[in-house]
Length: 330
Ligand code: UDP
Image 1 (cartoon, rainbow, N blue to C red):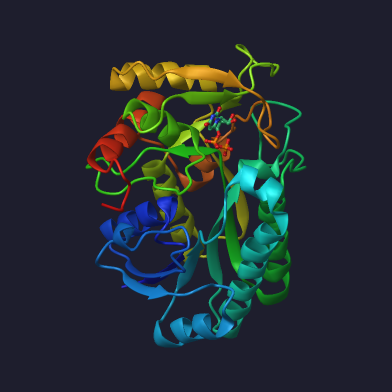
Image 2: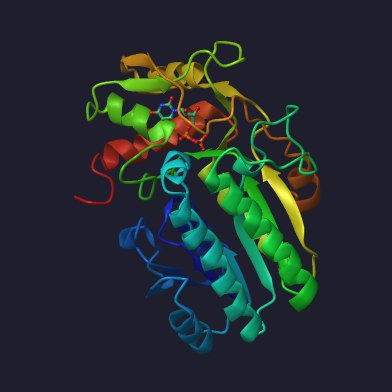
């Protein structure tokens, strides 16, 4: 069996990818420091090592013990507003963590890595939909760290022959369809889980950050992709590298934009709840509109999203939220 190391495998996207890897017959090793991840989110068939990827001794031990064929690298901090307030935390966690991971991979002759990049690397796009070759000028430190990670990977490929696939995610939502794993951040900052907390009565109202953007209704427009489709894209990317594929970059989105007001309406439809909302000031660092051109992922990786609809995304997130109103903590 092929062994894949998943860093950040206890996190939201990581845990869904671990689950799908096991479903596809891979042997899976998870590394996570559990700062934001959840032990209960990790599929019980994976071997789990608790530790920090910035700790080189810890990582060396994992690589000594396991025969790792490739790495899927999620471990990072990923909250845009937090990164605006505390950028150094972001450079330390994301950039230093990636450098340490690559050093250990190089030392152990592990030559393949798929990693989480982000639409945030593009900043305020010059044109919509965004193509992989478009300029990358981040508007927040989080996006800057992801762009730096991409560049570090490029030079590491040239020098050490570590092949990478960078997956630039747009907005991710949804949960495993049985509602057993899902999104649980503390504090929660993301739109869909916050809307659903209001629907559950755990928050009084949604605040919509900004209604004066140059969009159809003045609110930000984002491109939502289901976490299960995203997980499958990682598996396709890893298979491509295992079959000798070279380094590359792919956008992952649905190629359709939904405004924050449209998302609120869709959530009202799905849940049947009134979901009170009010307008609030803009949130610093938010680009106006982000929509992916994902043609390349579809053509080259053979990616074909199955849950390409915000009602399905919100519906599966709602199933998880109702089953786990307090997230993983009972
Ligand atoms: N948003 C909002 N109210 C909230 C949380 C988010 O209006 O309580 C908006 C946010 O300003 C952005 C969109 O929802 O326009 C998506 O934000 P999220 O944090 O989910 O993802 P991001 O786009 O930052 O990756």
